[in-house]
Length: 225
Image 1 (cartoon, rainbow, N blue to C red):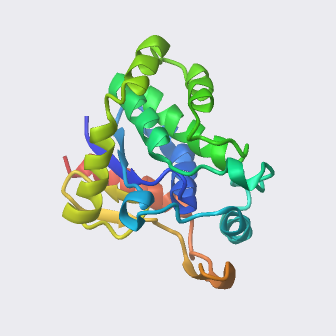
Image 2: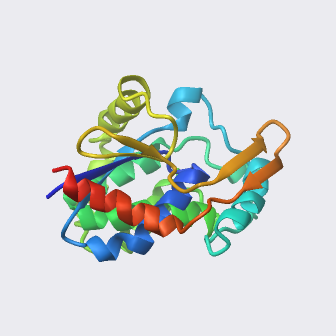
């Protein structure tokens, strides 16, 4: 089966949007293309957590323009409960990916939705295990053992290193097709966002149907294998 790789950072709002749109068209291609999630840690390349509650609030306003239906709520927990690292979430997705593609598909969304829409600290063990329990097709005992033992920690670090330094992707999320062609945040539009002051200077919407772009991307994966 042809493979579509997605290099993305779990706390990245652009990757959240890409995942949301991919899920809208994904059922049309069930059994035809395998999606493989690859870690592309922003924390790795920036050596810090880039996002914060104030930026999160500003980005919520931006993405309400881009995709009004994207599930997103303001962070209402204390700021000290904000994730200080996302490596545990990356490892959770890797643990699901190893078990089966369907579980990884659901875990990728569950982690992102928990953070953006539910305001949950997805760096915490109890939150990750609670999310895993709701993902169908997972061997929970195996998942817990793999995650607790850090079995795939080196994998997610290696994936981030490969994405940033070998593939030199342009950002999160980047889709990598079987022939090596890359597509970063397709059908996003033009954005001028001041990340220092959390101000949206301007936004020009994508002209056309974003989902049509995703459909064509997946069809391209099928044609290039």
